[in-house]
Image (cartoon, rainbow, N blue to C red; front, top):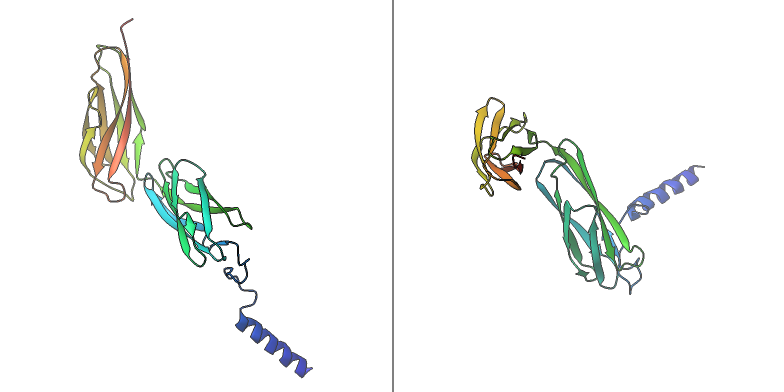
Length: 237
């Protein structure tokens, strides 16, 4: 009985040393020697937290553990808010990367999660799915988000938007301007919890237009804020 116990202990010991059963990347010896093999050690990336509107960059590293050149044929993202560039050819034993830039605009107060599909010439996995995710924090509250100037030509048409700080991200507006500026004018008034933005129409005749007011901040998390302006001016009829 004691002899059997000793044998069992020795088997377990050598099994542990050999690393049998441990998750390891495939290598050329395990793969077909004349075929490519794609291996991602970390197919999922969590960026923890980011400020809304910022781009989150990340490089997914891919290793060719096969014996032939790995070709990355296409990288498709799940939406237009995520862009990608990538290494197209990876020799045996070498590494390449899939470079991602995830735009968090519009995801304030929610979780960002997007998938990336990599198409390659690995015969065992023609498509590989990657994922980038994380929590997106609100930098500022703007109400309304877009300013609408609508009314009759010749009359005074203006609108007001409130810009409120988030507790975690107080800031000062250092500079402001309209991208086009021909149809609007505006002024900023400082408040204890933010700013009040008043925008006035300057178009004297019937017509429509769009513009954007750009606010430069002193906060490194988001150096620039934009507020969209839409104008719809009717004639007196």
